[in-house]
Image 1 (tube, rainbow, N blue to C red):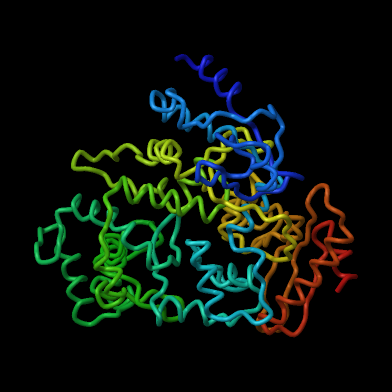
Image 2: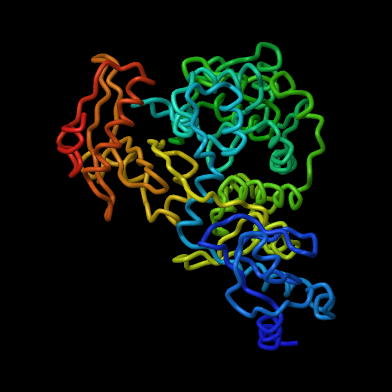
Amino acid sequence: MNSRELSLWLFSSWHFVRPAGSRGGSVSMTDGVTYPAGSLAPGSSPADWASNGVSAVASQEPAPRLDASPLFKAHPGRLRRYFRLAVELSLDEARRLALSAQGFGHRRATPRMGDVTKIASRVLAVQIDSINVLVRSHYLPAYSRLGAYPMATIDRLAYERRELFEGWTHATCLLPVRLYPLLRHRMTALRDASPWTPGRTTPASDHIQTVYEAVAEHGPLTAGELPGARERRGKWWGWSDGKLAIEYLLACGLVAVAGRRNFERLYDLTERVLPQEALDAPAPGPEQAQKELLCLSARALGVATADQLGGYLGLHSPRALVRGPDGKRPKRLWPGLLRELVEDGRLASLRVEGWTENGYALPDARIPKSMDERALLSPFDSFMRGPARVCCGFTQHLAQQLYVPAERRVFGYYVLPFLLGDTLVGRCDLKADRQRNVLMVRGAFVEDGQEPTRVASELAAELRFMQAWLELASIEVADRGELAPLLRRSL
């Protein structure tokens, strides 16, 4: 059977259904399988659709069951691919699905530790960054989603309760400890590629052994307390030999981050930091681990392109592709694994309005009917690493604001996107001046197509909320940006 014949058979025997009133959700059909709303539903009838809140937009005759056809056994993979590609989302649906998956829509009057834990579990990767012009970035995602929560909660979850750990995905992040077994194949590959293991030294690895023994005997230690701490090499962040050695040990999983002192990492042996159940859990091989990471990324993103799925938990990262003995990096596994997940029905391949490539989502993903949010987001927020661009048309190049001279910055330095309703409507450059006890708005901008007066009024309210959370006495608005005069009047 060629592609044309297969297409004709599908169009003649399957029903295209869309959510009634363009609403989302999932649909349970007569074959006992739950299909996403808007999908092709084999073996269903108009009565089935009506009872599940969907309406037929093609033939009104009952379609034959997919599994009753001999073509199913002959071409199961191809049929599943055609089936999944028949699902289509509007851009509004995709945006609401992404926001919901990212933990928005759950703001609390008095957020508790359990609420913060749920957000960390939803988002999966909370990026840590050294910039402290407003507040450390890893404290902002929970605030953006829940409201004013006790900032110390994040540190307690990571460094006291050990429910989060510091690991590398696309960058250094706080991750739920349940992800640790899924990342161990990277650590094992790095150890196998190196001639050094604890207790076995070569002339080139003596220093790594010395650092490991120092941590074992005296840990937790900062990089500055390690042997070789003052011997700097090269230009790579000015790292010393001791820092290079301890970061290698961290990447191998032989040490872990036990805490932070004035934001400086404290390193200790992994078995003295992570819960024993995380260390004892079976560690899947590369293929199975990456499949699980792709599915977890799909749950966290809601709907995403292939590239976004691969990048969310670091499958793009060079650290996930450890060089072999020949010095070459292995071929990336995840693109082929993504195709397998679609064929196996664990992920659905979707068409999304306005996207130039397919999106991917979990088959049981549920789309909220509405989303009414108001939040300022960290520049490093996980929503900004993918959904913001494809769902909101919002781009923000961090390298063009954080790592260039002031005169070359377009919107400012620490620029926070402003979420209102179900889309990003503006952005503002913020700084907490602790000496003067002032929240400084150094620039305020409105996105194209948004109503400036409404955005200014809502942004003013959100800035007052942030001012109270940061315990600052006042707000000061500079002249930069077309929204600044309106914002100043609203405050």
